[in-house]
Image 1: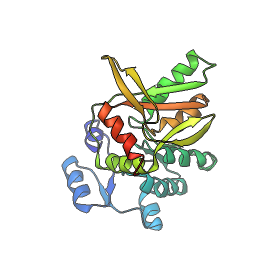
Image 2: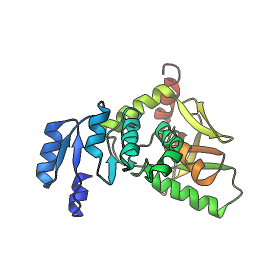
Image 3: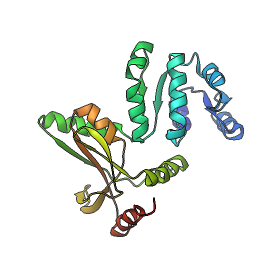
Image 4: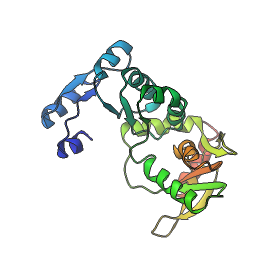
Length: 230
């Protein structure tokens, strides 16, 4: 992201806990670097105060989003992140009134999750305004970052999530399986606890939501077996 920003002639301040990593990348791109963590509220607030926007990229966001959002609210700084975690979206939504009062945007999930799928959900709702059920599916060839991998492991322990009658409910992993054509023929796909279970309801008002990704028969069997040990 820093390299893409530099390519577009933007000048972000790079920040993180690891001095070597942050300063090495900043030198490469000719950018300012700052080194701090999220465990000192006063230092965190001091470091982001005066900046218009934080793009928070440190997963797993279950551990990092809340302190950074809180600091942004106190600093009147807009907050974006690249999470896909349901709990983070729900936490952000719970701060809606505070964000409005502070005059800031709190918008998690501005990477792949959940902007493209949320736009698809909105388009479907416009086309079918009386819809009561929404099933979203996506296929991806990208690999997991370390933060995404940690989030996925956490997700295994927490099980699946779907929205039913307007409420987010826990279900077993690979709770539902169906076949979906993502553009190159049908594939087996299973439900996963993805961010749209939270956000698509706020976007569309549709009360029943499931999110699917493709998975081999072996992967689906493994997920279902994991229900016994998670």
